[in-house]
Image (cartoon, rainbow, N blue to C red):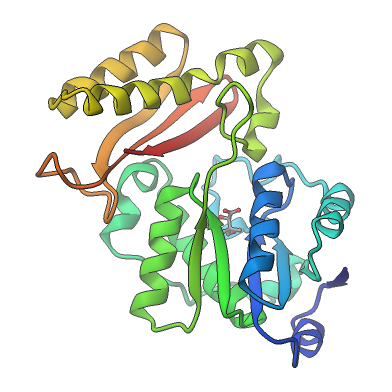
Length: 274
Ligand code: PAF
């Protein structure tokens, strides 16, 4: 695996490398990321990963400084997964001057996670657009665990007519159902044992809807109450339309149940398509 930290060296290395498939990350890799790397291989000739902890997508009171940085271990995992090229710029390379031009997503950026993390999706869209310009891939993969992020990026690519196919990778879970996430590292042993409740709550919503339940507000409130009783502080549990995350007007549209909740120091998010 070749590692490049400058945009010019990356572009030179990707010249004439056929169809380029890209998986952007912020590092601290787990099996969910590695699954995306392995899927990437089927979509092209050269698999490129990036590691960059993007300051723009963190709020002032969020965990930018504490975000786990595990570069050496990440490189080993990427090489073992068959990644051809790693782009690992530092801040001075990607933001050599204060970033003043942004990709401003529309109203979807203010829903759900965006309501609790103002500016987050603007920061994500801006860095992803910039990384796309650096790598110039034909295909890019993003995990479905960050469901809203995947929609924001799909919409950005469509509206800006970027010639990139966006592929969503299924969420990888531990045996007890907990979605793999870099932020699981913040959980104590007792919190780790409790954490799969979030997935159980979501599967409970799915089963209730499949069983004919139709009062979505009551289902959401019951889910929040179950989490609160077990010590969680919930930002949202929401049943939404898959296509645009709007509140469903019709029970027959494809739905997704999404949740974000705090357990100790960790803010965990998860979702399940229904
Ligand atoms: O999902 C992530 O890890 C990040 O939001 C991304 C897409 C790499 C942008 O910084």
